[in-house]
Amino acid sequence: DIQTTQSPSSLSASVGDRVTITCRTSQSISTYLNWYQQKPGKAPNLLIYAASSLQSGVPSRFSGSGSGTDFTLTISSLQPEDFAIYYCQQSHSTPLTFGGGTKVEIK
Amino acid sequence: EVQLVESGGGLVQPGGSLRLSCAASGFTFTNFWMHWVRQAPGKGLVWVSRIHSDGSSTNYADSVKGRFTISRDNAKNTLYLQMSSLRAEDTAVYYCARDPRGGTCDLWGQGTLVTVSS
Image 1: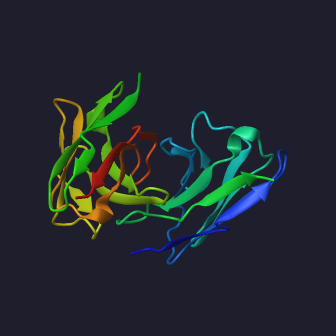
Image 2: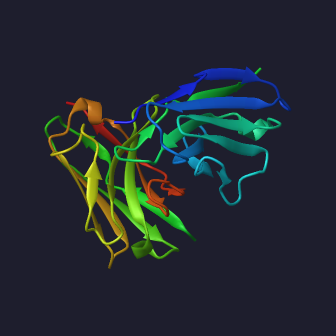
């Protein structure tokens, strides 16, 4: 199975800050990597697919990069509605695996 | 409206069975793979199972293999998860999700809570 690891597990940031979350996989997955946002009591929402493609309707302040085993989600200017938990997920092979999540909190 | 609506969750005793349903609307159900993903209270997301658009192929997490069965009725636009031999560690919110491109979940239901307890 491909292990998927995120860091940090939590971070505190202010509105307007640039935020970066990292995801690493235990083997190369090309660009088969997705990012999701989840708010309390809600279902996850797809932000980025194929490592760097922005899902329709997602604000352009979200971006993704990386290939192989190392990936990054960047929020260029954090907005109040962005405080949530973010998950990466590899779609290279089953079992599909998610990272442990990164909780973005208000500083 | 494009949506997925899960149902069938509830309280069940260890060793019991439950069938979850996921009703799809607003899109062509037969064009998509479908997944079940679960989330234990206060924990992260865990993939459970997926099924091909025509039902011809299925995959499972090791933790549920042999106990859970995914299926679909394309005539009814409905996805199912038959769960048996349930354990306390199966307690979670279960989400169904649509997959347009092989492992990417672009539409999720609201989730249904399964609690396994005596």
